[in-house]
Length: 425
Image (cartoon, one colour):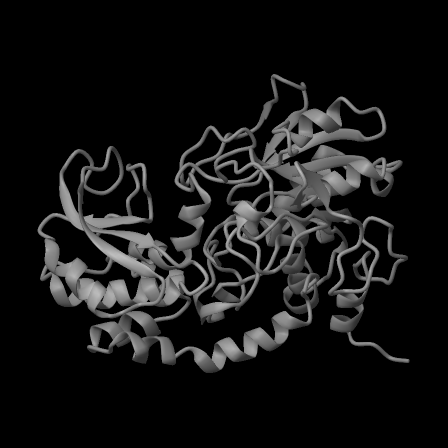
């Protein structure tokens, strides 16, 4: 019986360019969670891919020299880092670490990394992956001497959050270098219920969006890895995934029982992630997106904005959210040390809240209520939204419904593809 590449990749637990026998840690029918969830104080707790890998004695890594792509979010439920745990366990031969943006130990701000160094805690060599892709990144994997690359990083659920494209680049490079690739799954912190927002046009591909996926993708990192391998990579990598147990697509992060570790300096809480896929669009404007405050992406503003913006935003009647007139002085980034006016988002019904629609509504009302509104001169907004469509529609006076309606056909097509790679129901 002939099977398409997509069918082969979506069907089993061990996935790659060739069919493989499903390992116990990944076995099970797609849509059913294998293994019983953990319990703490009688409450359900999600078991991450790393927990399940370790519980199985690292059998998937036996006889392999292993390198791990991770950052401070790669932790156990008791907040130990998986690199420290694996390094101390004789059952796994951990020989290298690969750091993404912000670095392995998380010392770098946005747009930075830690470079090449030896980790003081373990002595392991740490290699920098940030802004590397293709053959140069494959050369890093080759130089490290590893046989298998393991990925374990907490995502935030948005297309422009760079860790998922680190995943993509590392998969592509591992294929070029002839390495196995294992993805340890973690929750999407804002649920996996639906994909929302515009789909990237490949003409606008950058490190904040390599391939045509929705702005809020509604997938876990393991599901994205399957999608990348099945739809986008020219040469599929020998891919395996280790699923979570106990996670439901309707779960917000606080339902998982797992510790929240900020995946980047400006993603301090799960509430930040909840709004991020919409309000990060303000990076493409001359307004502050709240960097340099204790509420990044929840506070938005600029000099000269007053109560009229909050009033206009509330008048939209956007579901699940209200807007408060707010004033703040960022300690760094835009308007550093200067008091600005704007809004703070207050999500009162996260089940009803649509972050992308909210972000568009805020852009529309900001432009109409503040004469100083401007897009960044480099049209960064086009990179974030994946095309010129949002910018040009708003500039032409379109309202929120018109802008949101413009991407529905592309979104429906993406949702149909996405459905084939979902591991949890």
